[in-house]
Image (cartoon, rainbow, N blue to C red; front, side):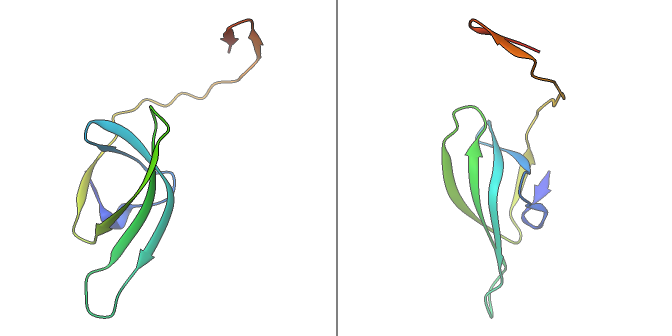
Length: 82
């Protein structure tokens, strides 16, 4: 489980059962209140983006993903050969 202070560009997290990646990240600390973390998130399945603001105490789940490094060789008709 991540906390808002763990937010960084490229972090992958789960929101409402969907995997998202942090595209843009901004930290701000107003004079009296809690720290704010403004993020632009991109859905890794549909590609849609939206902005969301988190407070310093907010928590969220990490995305359940497997990453594999692959090499793109060439495209053959409709299939991609790797």
